[in-house]
Image (cartoon, rainbow, N blue to C red; front, side, top):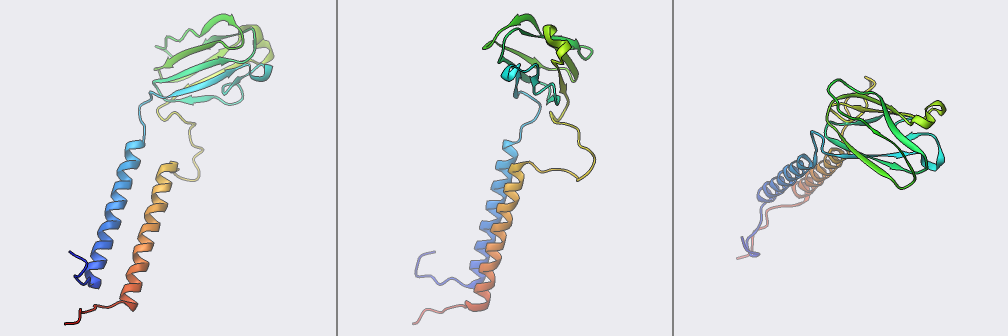
Amino acid sequence: MNSDTPVSRRRFLQGAAGATAAAASAGVATAQEGEGGGGGGSATVAVGPDGDYVYTPGTEEPLYIAPGTTVTFNWQSDNHNIAPTSVPDGATWEGHQPTENTGFTYEHTFETMGTYEYECTPHAGLGMVGTIIVNETGSPPSSGGGGPTLPDSAMSLAVGTVAAMLTTLSLAYLFLRYGGDYETPQ
């Protein structure tokens, strides 16, 4: 089609609808490619942040991860260790028993699902205990209310798709209401 060819309302609406559908399906494919699954991620636990006798996360709230996640423990104060007190059957995690100081890091990849409980041996009496929960989703169980949640990428995709459809419908209305088939003068 060249610039001298007139465009009818029907051709315009067909083209706009096709463009909207193509944009929406491309957005869905992009969102699906970005979704992860099956672990392989990473998480970080601060050991003794600000000199407090805690693991963050871990002491106040458990750290939830998916199988295959590598957790890096970063020492942020002195004289701490990681001594497991309970691990799931079949798990081989032994923690890091030697006492270490600020700047030390330790990594472990958690493959077995279940609850891992651990403590800092010198500071267990002060409440320096932690929990890691490995489950399929890598997130806390839902409280049962509110229904399913959408990831941010899906919500952005939905908002963009609705905006594209509303724009197309608005333009279609304007062309149908005020537009027309214009014949080129002969």
